[in-house]
Image 1 (cartoon, rainbow, N blue to C red):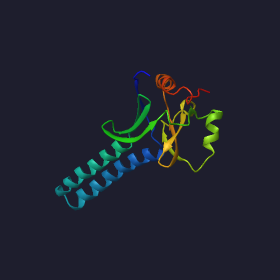
Image 2: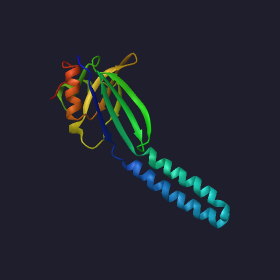
Image 3: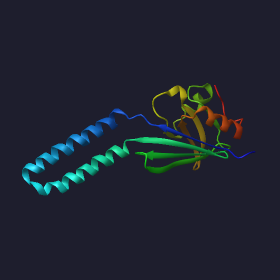
Image 4: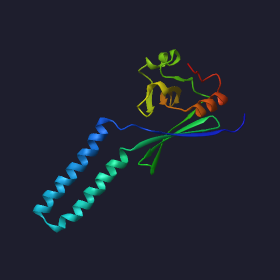
Length: 168
């Protein structure tokens, strides 16, 4: 088969907890800085800068994107934090996967019932209709990998492993 390369970036929607963490970190940094300014004075500026860096770090770690890269039948998923820090989330061979199907399809319903399989969610969390399920080898068992491929990525997967990809 020919070489193929497809990549896609999906931004994860911030949850209520992440938004609360952001607001809480800003409010607590302002309150702590104000109290320290009253008690210690100008020396507290060092602590204010440290708190500012902590708030910046919270904002970076709560801004998450997933990058899917399909190269010759191997799907690599990276987690990108704050559009600058990248961490490898997983590498899955689609030729060895059991199935790749929409989450709401009958094909996926069989695998969604099994609670013994490890699950990984690499979706935006906004639209379940676009989400796909891939059951792939993981360690000694299998893993459910949820992701949101675009049309180009689905077509490339169908080209690499036509019997594994189900469209409805």
